[in-house]
Every structure is written in structure tokens, then in C-alpha cells.
Length: 94
Image (cartoon, rainbow, N blue to C red; front, side, top):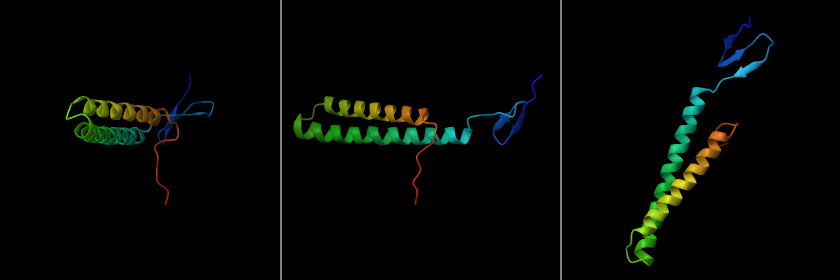
């Protein structure tokens, strides 16, 4: 039988190898970054769409929806990169 012991968020088997589990706080931090990033991108796309609509297209709706779509797409792609990253989330070094 293989014996496993849990130590500080990691499991250790008989051979002495550590199999790390995903830390829940890191996953929650990633979700926080992804959702806030998506909200900012959608807001910026909405703002650019409204300004473009008012200035260039005589208050039509399609520039606003296009800006929101670009914001969602950019937020999704950056969120995907954050979740695929093995190094964790971005931090600011002072």
C-alpha cells in the first residue's frame, strides 16, 4: 500500500515526491484579478464606444456594442493567460 501524508498544502507519497495541490487562496486571487480586469476592459470599451458613437456615427448603437465586445475579448484572453500561468498572479515590487 502507498502511504500519503499531508503537509502544508502538499501531499507526499512513499517515494518522497511532493505532489502539490492548487492552493485555494491563489485560485481565489486569480479569479479576483480576472474579474476586475474584465470589468475594467468592458468599461473602457463601453466608454470608447460611446465617445465614438457620439462623435462619428450620429449616436448609433453599434460602436458601443463593438467596444464592449472588444473589452470582453481582451479580458477573456488575459484571464486565460492568468489561469494558464504557473507562476501565480502579477505582483508589484517596490
